Length: 335
Ligand SMILES: NC(=O)c1ccc[n+]([C@@H]2O[C@H](COP(=O)([O-])OP(=O)(O)OC[C@H]3O[C@@H](n4cnc5c(N)ncnc54)[C@H](OP(=O)(O)O)[C@@H]3O)[C@@H](O)[C@H]2O)c1
Image (cartoon, rainbow, N blue to C red; front, side, top):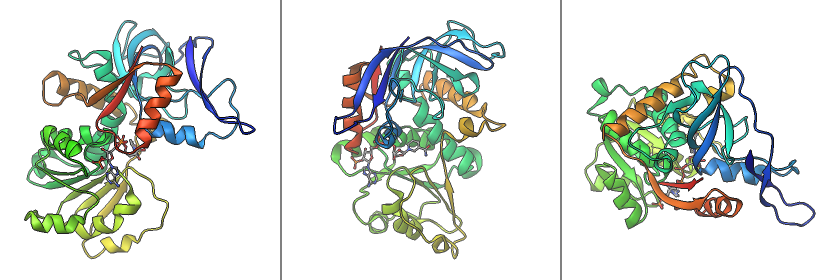
């Protein structure tokens, strides 16, 4: 199989992605061997690249978002068969999807939407798992009981925000206020169904007041938790809940939420595969639910741009774009 790995800079020489051949693995147990057709990039890719300091042999295969075709299955596989079209994010503790083939546990893989091609499908898995788990597993939103409630989505135009706006609006039935700082990202949030858009670089409480918006029952923080922590504690409604997906580098005072009996919860979409939790098959189920929502026209792919074929140069270009922090929707590379 072909693979593209990252090799960090050594002795003053710059690091970079390199292409190499390696033995195609044989699936065992619950694993599928998938022939990859398209991948998408996420901030986790450049964060792992930046954190890779030790020499790799031959290179560290990054990338945790793919669409492809099942080529072979392990002896315990019951959910898929060779030839199935699948999409998945995978497991950060295993080799990634910047390759021609990848092993992935069937319990974290979904059947691809029938109405999408591989590129449009590859845009979805990692961010959909994150947004779905945030809304329904961490915040425990019940669309029937909570439908009149209000959600603030910080970082609305990014990869996660783009699918979260749609799920919050179309599936959870919430009133959705997204944040975006530019006209292009503001329009993107509105096109995905946001009811209102405010600017994350300006005082958010003032913008809520100016627009006559009631305090959000839910805040989904998809960018810079350190910068937004104070305003989230100020804004959150009494008995509300904040969910963040972005780690902090500073200490924050949770007691600021006490008088409101408000809560704070983390979401990490790799938790289920990393810890092999008893319910890891929920990621299979939720990806299938995403596929049905796409096929019924309830939500759409968040693919914004295809950066060309999957090769070392295009992966680095995609990382550089993501590192600007101003990406709208998702970037995909195809095979
Ligand atoms: N815990 C998990 O499971 C998990 C899963 C996925 C992602 N993440 C993390 O979540 C973050 C977002 O991921 P992503 O894929 O959505 O990233 P992304 O696509 O790169 O996000 C880009 C968006 O961020 C917005 N943005 C930039 N600075 C902001 C700020 N200070 N406050 C609010 N929004 C800001 C930009 O909007 P404007 O251009 O309009 O300013 C832009 O549209 C990353 O840190 C990623 O590592 C965590």
